[in-house]
Image (cartoon, rainbow, N blue to C red; front, side, top):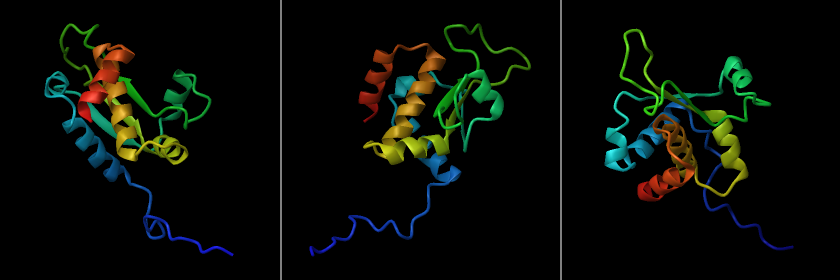
Length: 141
């Protein structure tokens, strides 16, 4: 019988990253984005939640709450004519549990996955193409 090697990291005492951990990772990912991109995000609010609420799941026609990794809510810059009184700020939501689920099944690091979702959702704010978002991801690495 062959010997069993210990894992490269000791996962036995680790817990899943909390909402606060995700917020910290999203902050690091945001700060690594190209400066011109970050400046254009002035006023954008980034929120971390465990799951999208039932209304969002229904509105997005998702088959489950695990299907959505993130969401942009607000008026994209392409449609914006300035901020109006009583208007909510543009927001990006990152959903912790679905992101963890994708991370557990894939090869990507958790930090890279959070950056990818963040860029994709902010990209909706700007009306960017997938090619534009891919370029921003490469610049943020």
